Image 1 (cartoon, rainbow over the protein chains, first blue to last red):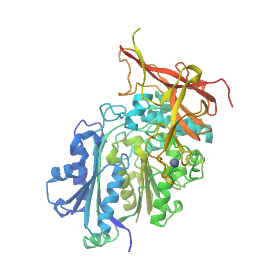
Image 2: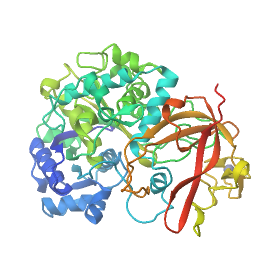
Image 3: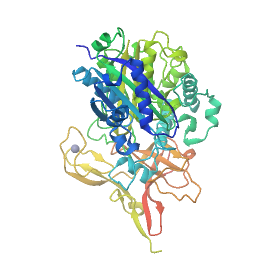
Length: 396
Length: 148
Ligand SMILES: [Zn+2]
């Protein structure tokens, strides 16, 4: 038995700062995905919502919130929270329901209405929460962690701020071609280096913004897709959602310290690489088979790290791969053809789903001016708070 | 000057001057060290230990990486909105004996330009902020002047 499920539909609400509620973005994305699938909402047997923590109860019960807004129709309902990996875990939940025979068609939706400026922890006096503590005790925002990783790469691998700027130049050029992206303007390296430092060595244009946005996919069994007249659908072949392994050796959001390696030797494989490896093993493919990749470029420097963690190049060779043009359009393995978070910004529960939307369009050959010729295999990868992360592999 | 001094988090550090130390806990079964402290269960998946003793962490370590915060962090970080924002430097420090990395603010006045990965730093007591009743204390990393 194959573990494949079909992507029947993909849809988004354009990202930006629209000032409206997340339900509106999610419903718009859901309707777009249903239209793309050629399905009526009442034909959907299950809905899975990726939660946002910023919407109070409606956000915590996103599946039911979207179901009510679309019109109660008796579908099975699930809500999933996993920080930045919420969307991928929602896709995984939908996939498992389909493979278990519990539903033929599942709608997956994620949407967010993000605050201005830095993400911050939920309110109240909560010293039991590591996310609250890192803000309270250190004032350590997300960009300061990205700054630590960037500086570490410069010290260990010899990356330069010019390398980081070139990631933004590449992603902005792609975002300019994507009608769903928030930022649709090309950026030069000079503009990156002229932007304000946020967390040394990273500047404003090295770091992704917070955004409003929504994304949705309609998944079904391959059998159902055929009955529905889709003979050769894009298929999700693997979803990886594994945790890190003790002891962590890299300081990760929102932690104040790593684990001690006194008692147990750290795994030679870092967390992000394990996310990708598990997906590769499940799909039975390797990095050499990839046509496109969508990775979580929370910062420009982090995109280079992903090149190594996905096995696109050796450790420390990320900047070299970028300089060679391998990850740009026309290169061996274009990365973030959507424009990435650099062009979208973060709408947390939607982003991992948006990555799968982009890969779906690439594999269908409908990505317009961003199209990678002959794309057959795509991977997505992300990492979020509290040891969450994901990788999805789709094939055609 | 009737204000009291209070740690921003209880039992994470203690001592004055040269005696100041970060406080972690150590599993008596497998010797794993935890900071912030774990007091209930060891987090080593191969260990069932639930007997954790308080231990002071190494006073000195080496810079794993560093950065700064050029924009005012949001609440619950406490700042005075009346005053211009003074960027603070953050240092992640590798402790050799504990084989772990601990993040902290640098002492005031240390800018990123004065730091390098691998540089030696030591932990010192510092003040996070003050209000009408309380001086909130914390730990800070200070370069020892020894590079390498
Ligand atoms: Zn133990």
